Image 1 (cartoon, rainbow, N blue to C red):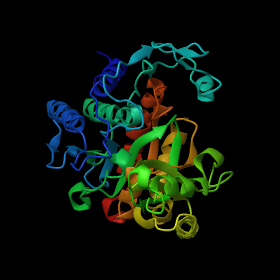
Image 2 (image 1 turned 30 degrees about the vertical axis):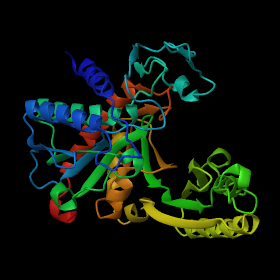
Image 3 (image 1 turned 180 degrees about the vertical axis):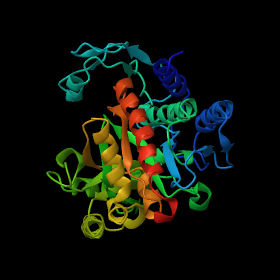
Length: 415
């Protein structure tokens, strides 16, 4: 099997293993499929002959591709095993479209991926695409990254003349629910720089993420039988609904913002008359703006309490991650060499921002500079998700060349 077909085969095998993260689970990882996929990867990594291959007690998969430039910095490559819980992720039936010729894509269930809704298709003429059947997500976020890293490891071994230092591999769990680096061990990693392969398209070099918090708001009412509710019932559902209705309507929401604009995103509401719980994402590229968003929630609590006396409202805000650009500015070589590698390969490149987060944001925050790189994902978190194999191939060529650029750097200059 030639390397390109091997790459496609990897991706198809991996996406068929359902591994959706479960935000309601108390376990780690939150779904059995992540451990199952991790076990498969461990077997394949051992068959390749890599060193230090293990699936640790938390389900994280580690391995080392031995290098041939002993003085070079150690580089970490990271992708995540879980897929988004926002669309069905079991019984994935991937389809391969060879040499896409243009136009809308009809999926097996009759749904369409249109050029109008996905204008990126116009730049993918001639590409091999792997699509969903329309009933589930594909899982290219981030199994495209997983397959790409596995293929990078294989091709490094098959081309021993290519200069590189030791390459550490890490596949994390539960990234989609903000827990990807919960058990990340910086000392065990042993790298000086890292890259997550978890981005869209080709040639994007993500150097900033949102800063992110999550607000959990509990509305505590009093439930009675409706027949005797007068003067006694305190309806938590109504209070929560009113609170949501008072959030900014024409601004500060995902559906009304773009570029560097932040937002408040109510994404989960559950409960009953006696108690309801609302969760809201706070997002902004300027970390200080998160405190302003929190102040707005406090103001809405006071306003809601005045309209619904007797309903207690409790707000808890948990920190999730911070803009990795703040730390990457102190380690410009991580970005500069990645950009140089794109230029050397004549792959169009642009420095970009992520209106979201990655494992790399949290790794960067604790001392491992970790930009995010493209790996051919499109329409993620939806049943119209697809992956470009050609973009994955670009990611492989780019990383192998980037490793050679890092081999020219002395380890002590990065430590």
